[in-house]
Length: 105
Image (cartoon, rainbow, N blue to C red; front, side, top):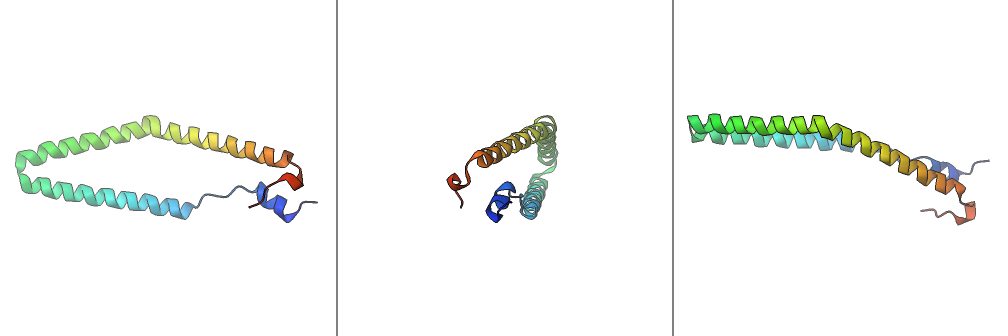
């Protein structure tokens, strides 16, 4: 028979996807706002400066995108796999303990 406390320990807390979505939306919104402000300021500075700085900004964006595509996704997958392994190891350790030795929060 499984007790209520034992069942709650076997369930890993699910990440709050709503907070993740809001964080991503905030980062994208702030990035777009800062980019727009930079373009307006560079446009007001003059013709040649605007073109050069816009090219530099585009280069930085392309470098960041390339870096994410080459390394970022692989690192996220690796971290997710390590986290799953650690959670499974923690769960196995909890299940091998005697019920009276378990620490409940």
